[in-house]
Image (cartoon, rainbow, N blue to C red; front, side):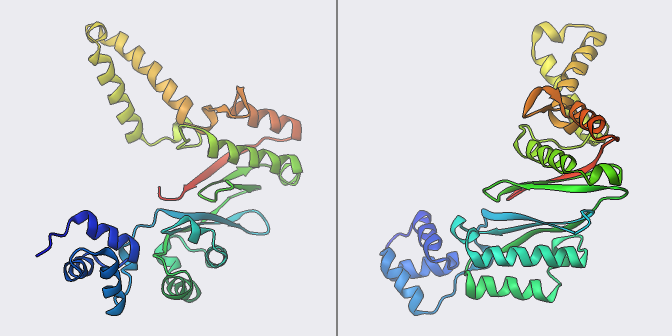
Length: 290
């Protein structure tokens, strides 16, 4: 009997999308001939195992209410970049975002209970797009109090940031305020490392504890530092944590358009220029596959 390698089975699976077992049987029957095995599967009417195929591509979409206070965050995944750019995929993504905003859904599972969304996903998988389509995110965010939500999606569609900021109605109505929100969203999209919280006090305690432990371990790795008194080590740890906060807290980061200015200082400056205090309430950074 012809020996069938796992790599050959995977090659056939990637090409036609059928299950691993079906691909191996077809290759055995075809004596290792890839094209014949594909024809065998097609002749047998084996359907692509779309539910298990990898969804490494996709798009992010935001849908914002007219008053700028409610936001739908949607991430729809697929197998190929070609499919993600397909008009049908884009239409489905837009529909899901609109339905999520209207329904106030809190997660993807809740959104998939919506009849129109469920039907759209089913048709995309089986008929129109014929790839594995996964609704990875479908949530609604609300900005409490006065202000607006700003959004930015990178031209690739694979990463987007939405940010809610509080300000008086007079300040929020100014075009400069909308421009600031877009700049902040673009900053959070581009900055590396990515921000994980608005301010350092908002970073979860377990994350800080982990960074602290890593800092101490790195100090003890160096024989010269390992022998230093605990109070000196504490100062060294504090220094490492300051750098961590500057990298991961949005307000502590250096603004990408002007590295001489922290985001905190930028927001304060714009507030004075526009005639009122501006406060960042929250942000969402959505990346396909993360």
